[in-house]
Length: 454
Image 1 (tube, rainbow, N blue to C red):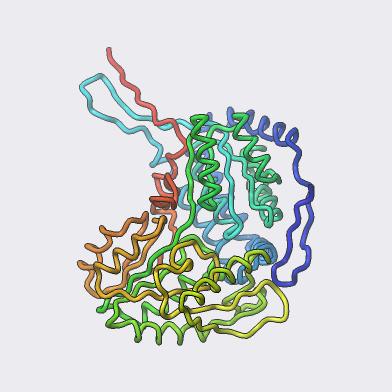
Image 2 (cartoon, one colour):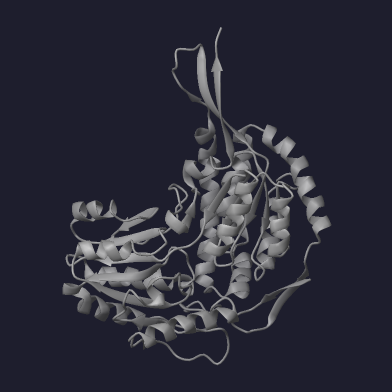
């Protein structure tokens, strides 16, 4: 089987690769398991130092990697550069902090000595998405490898060059061979790798359907699993909010990566007293968005990553229109590429699909709530619980409200964004487990208790 990388702007083929056979996967994972013995035996301080070199390689080759990202999935080039820089920051963070995070924890139990130690599990399998093709992989792999594991990944089929380049980054940074490996395979082969118990843990970022399937499979085999399954994040604007600033961040949050982000604000829930002002400010900001060639430095909105995604967005919009929506569409039509113009639905209702499913594209529904209680009820009404944003000048009020929101992350007067220093993950059908910070570092370790008596 051939794996093709298609440029969503030019609609031309970038690169073509042969997929790996199952025998090739077995061989490669076997080498990874052999590499685990040596890698896991290194002191954590030495393992962590390797990531200083990884960050250097990333920064030295930022333009190369950013161009690959943009050509493979259409992200505006400025955002692609930002993605590479974020990966480098992540590496620096764990290089500086992993040893402290993983040191033994002494517990006074009355014994001669009692402590908790953190030991790596082995080969960890990452099933990664296309929307942040470098960041998603690094977010998973860096903590896992710092902890002493080795990693193999199955990347999304539309970003094979990103997958192979990431493997080269580790090699160029001087890692032992097979500590990190990329497998060019389809979903069926990925399932077979798990079924045959070739790996010791699984991390997946993807859809609820994919997460349910992989979670069931890993659970049946008693394998630890981390699932990050997306969201439909509420963006709550209270009547005492800074409306102009809220609108600016709303546009940034919704339309970053052309709306193809799990933690994008996706439902704008606005108290009725200020909804007209918010929509007016929102529209002014949307009018400033530039759509076009993602390699252009001025572009804000690039093409959608894959042609078939356009049909899904059109179906969501058609459903909204059927239920009374009058969409406001911005930006010029493009002569080529998989473009979907930024769309505002100013009077959305909660029965519309756009308010209930994860919409991976530049559509922004605004829902009116009569008060904060109704806003919270609407915010919690979906199956998702990844992130949320609350806008209010009264910080105590906003924090009280934050406790009522069922999500893994709440940003008050700011944008939800992953940060190496903070745990990242969701509740409900947005996933299980956490990535990043010291919590993410300990997802794929044996938390072992040792009690010493004379």
